[in-house]
Image (tube, rainbow, N blue to C red):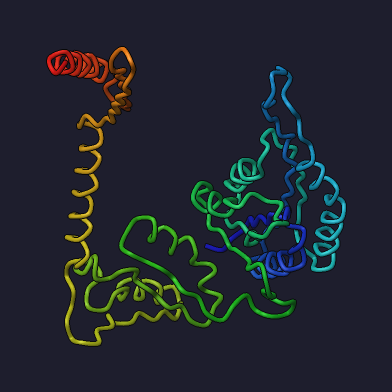
Length: 311
C-alpha cells in the first residue's frame, strides 16, 4: 500500500532544500499529497528568581521561527509548483513552548513523516530530543534526513540500500511493515538482527531469514546473514551478568550501612585553669541527633566523675 499523505517538518530552516528534495521525490514517487508543516511555538514563561510575583515571558524562541516563516513557505510553494505536486501548507500557532508537542499531534494524520536530524551545536534552535520524541510518540514512520550531505537529488532515486533492524519484538515488526513502501524503492534491503545471541531461539541460525522471505513476497530483494561466529563457540549467556549482580549487591549493602548505622564525631577539649579544669565537649551526627545529645550528656557525667575522683 503506497503512501498517500506525506508530511515534511520544515522548522529546521538550515536544511529546507534537502528536506524538500526528499519530500518531493517521495511525493512524486507515490503520487502523494504533500503537507508542509511549520510550527510557531508559544512564548516561554519562566518563574521570576526574585521575590516579584510576576513571571518572565520570553518570546525570542517564537520570534526566531516567525522571522523565517515567510522564506520557508516561499521555498515550499515554489518547489510544489515546479514539481507539480499536490501540496498543502500549514502554519500552526502552537499552544506549547516546544515544537515537539504540535509536531507529534499533526504527524498522526500522515502516513510518512520527513524531518531533519537535529543539530546539537550551540546554534541549534530546535529542542534536542525532538526527533526521538517524534519517532517514539507519533506512531508513524519517520524518515530522518542527515544534518549534512544531500538526499534524493532531483531526478534521482530515493536510496540504493536500506538496513532494517529487527529483534523479534512487536515494535521492530511494526516498523518493518510500516516501511514496506520505502523498501520497494531501494535495490537491496539488509536485515540485521540486534543481539541475536540474546534471543537465540527466536533468531535461529540465520537471523531474519523468515522476515527476508516475507519481504521477498512483496518483490523486495532482502538479505539476511547467518550469525557471525569466529571461534565456533556460541555464547548463550552474558558473562558479565554475575559481575553486575555482585556489584549491585555491594551497592545495596553500602547504602544499607550508610542508612542504618549510627555514625557520629565527638570532640573533647580539656583546659587547665587556676581553679580547676575546663571541659568542652562537641559532637556531630547526620542521622540520630537525639541519640548524640544523650551520649554527650553521659560522656560529660563520666568525665566529671573521673576528674572529681582524681582531684
